[in-house]
Amino acid sequence: MSHDVLPVGRPEQPLPAVGAVEVDHPTPRVNRTQGDAVQLDAIPASPPPEVLQQVDAAAEAVERLRRQGRELRFHVDPEHGRVQIEVRDLEGHVIRRIPPSKALDIATGGSLE
Image (cartoon, rainbow, N blue to C red; front, side):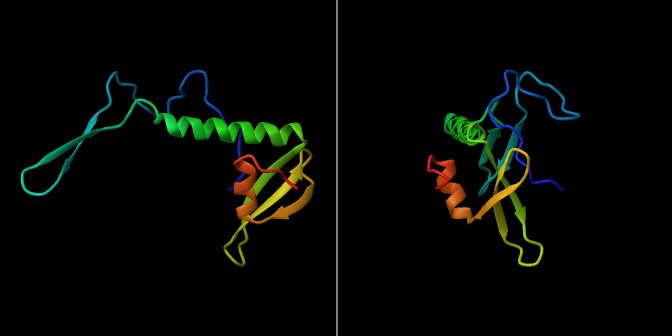
């Protein structure tokens, strides 16, 4: 299994999932609560604006790293079960390993230094 992160950002047109059936309106889900009360939920046509903003911010972080000739690779250490993050050049050579907290800092605009 690969944990490589593909380019992020919003596609020009939404891509249907494999085997997806397109419908004009989302199918509502019925959730029963206490007694006879019924709550009707529908899956939204698109993610909330704050999620789209976060996707855009992640795409900008990826592009910023690429302009510096860098990329982040994530994998789980099989011996310890911990996430390891490597900063690599675009040819795949490991430049350094960083803790997950530093990766979050980079994703929110911090530098690699």
